[in-house]
Image (tube, rainbow, N blue to C red; front, top):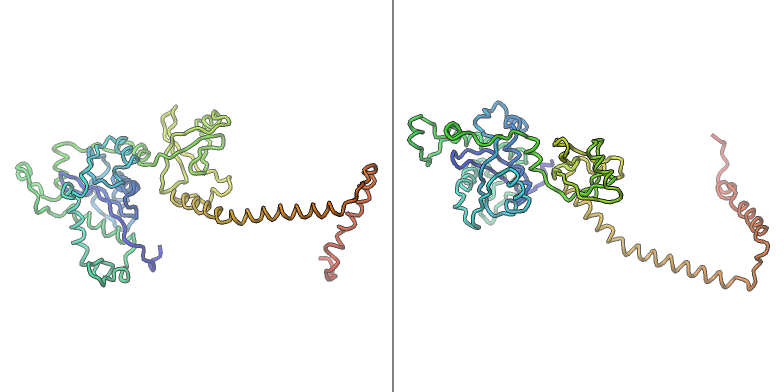
Amino acid sequence: TNPDKVIGRPILYALIDVYSRAIVAISVSFENNSVLGMTNCLINLGEDKEDFCSRYGITNIDSSKWPSNFIPNRIRVDRGRDFISKEAERIFNELHITRETVTGATGSMKGIIEQLWHQIHSAQNSSLLNAGLITKRYDSNHKRTACLTLREITQMVIVHVLAYNELELKNFRPSKEMVRNKVSLTPSSIWEFGTNKFGYPRPIINKSQYAYTLMKKPVAKISRKGVCIDGLYYANDDEYLLNEMIQTGNKSLPFDCRYDERNITKVYYIDKNTKELKSASLIEEIRGQCDFINSTRQERLDFLENEKRLREEYNQKQQTIRSSRIGLFDDMVKTAKKSRKEELDTKHIAENRKLERNKNRSDNDIDTRLLKEQKKEPYD
């Protein structure tokens, strides 16, 4: 957002087909070792590639050269926490994808994707010279020469994918059938040949269900106030959700729902009666919730952490104020006790109260309190 500030390197996730070597999905973001990075890649796998490229100013592409909109049968990954976490395991299970993890520190067991990184670096390093390229020199000045934004780096990656899927694979060993059918040894052509021979992978028929699976399953509670996640409340006018809220009574019960950590404005749930996917939005009438519309979950967690830290910082000051207040009260009461007479008039309370009330009213008249020291001016 501000090209004058250096923010480090983005992280590239890629999904590449083992049979054809075709790149089928990418993700360029700042999510490192995070399930969000993996799901970013799976989101790209299910979205329209023409729309995706047009968002970055790349138009008139041949979408058939970039396979998408399918669910893999098996994905080979390393042992990063973004792939072996419980959340990642849930996503793989719900999508019926076999997760194959390789042994740690054995990049050769997933050599296809590792080789892709080398090819990307080889293709871009000459252009990035003196433009942010990190060199293995003690005087590398990549931070001072950096010039690319996240959008521009994503454009470069998209161009590389489109070119890579159309470039011939020099070390690829074709089968007799490929040679007989004169299949061009490019990833996109091999992909087309493979799908015609073995069948197309499972297509993503229901995009809503696919999206629901990729969302996070939060710790959510439902009560009469609505669905509560991280202290924020969600609700809508849906009859099913309203009935769920009413049936809780005065309790707060667990609620099965999902939400996107990239935008916490809405939560999504399945109507158990109609089996439809529905959403509930932040209740804007509740004070402070408007501040988190179109915010990420991390922004909400940072706010809660800062709020907690702020309260802890002022806790000592609050304790001092409370102690001082009690001490002043004690001094006032002691002074009053010393000036009190031995015997008090308790028989004429009503008359005494009337006299004191009139005296109090006289002391609080407006002229004495507001107009006495003011300059006389005409009334406007």
